[in-house]
Image (cartoon, rainbow, N blue to C red; front, side, top):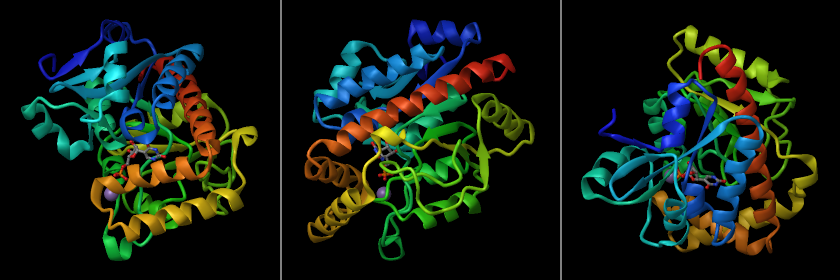
Length: 306
Ligand code: PSU
Ligand code: MN
């Protein structure tokens, strides 16, 4: 693996000593948030992991190398350099051959976390089935990766730019467990409740870690989605955000935005239209997810799966 993954000294030591680690994605830095909130959030998220007893392993592709654990220069590059791409799992091989640089989506980050031996990963929101997918066929590779790569992903549910019931159906079809943390409803990113009842609620990081370990022992072969509602004090009013999202989707349709450009376009429009409120919520929920993932990682290290 050493020729494929460039693992930072800190992460390499933690892997050797079986200390708790949390993998973090980097498309949120390159394409999910504007400068300078992107780099501020990345730093705050890494700090949240440390504050909760684990070490952060942010993953990205820099100059044709798979980097596990980033230094300041790599973060700066992702945050400011407009030529940095967006890589899902399928993009990795050609990107490495070309010597390119990219933020890794949930899909690509899961793949590389699995290779590095990190079983838990925190993000803001996963990609999913887009509204109108019956026409566009736009279903994120994140869902397919969750069906094939055994990494647990902590997310604030899925953003309502997506069709949430269809997203949950695809996860169910693929045998991906959806565990909600301290909530009876599946959360929708900016808001705590979707109106969709959660079937598998667990209330402590220790219980979630036990479920992650058992899911592996059962030979399930799939990832897991740990849905962590945004803290109430950071959540947005559904009436506010739903209108903004609907407007952004209409703009994307009018402008014929397609493929991997759709999600970054919608995120940019929502950030612009909400006058900073969505940004603030987004930052808060990613930190909240990183903290929970770290607490789960600590429990996983105790039961000897990292
Ligand atoms: N959802 C967000 N913020 C993000 C993303 C999704 O609220 O930054 C990013 C994640 O990296 C996710 C990717 O994996 O977008 C999904 O892109 P697509 O829909 O093209 O699969
Ligand atoms: Mn897509």
